[in-house]
Image (cartoon, rainbow, N blue to C red):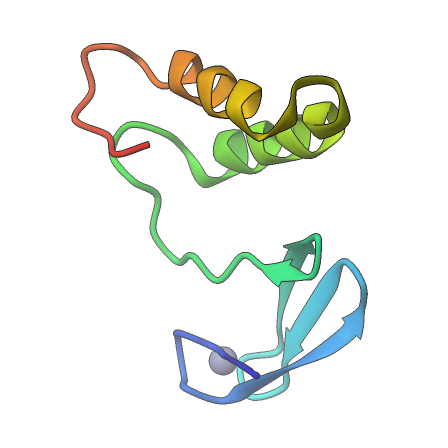
Length: 85
Ligand SMILES: [Zn+2]
């Protein structure tokens, strides 16, 4: 069960790529069944850019494996940021 972070209402799975909050009338996209519930972007990366990168990670999972993807992700974050990987 997932909860909308804006209103604390349970969100409903619409299809494998989308959840929906009926109270906010808001759609939440999902990747591999995991909804993106973020409301605010971290200072080092926009939510949309991070989402695009997550899609790239999924696309390359079979090519790189888990360890390779960690390196891929590490190299994606700007070196001068304070971001946690
Ligand atoms: Zn809501």
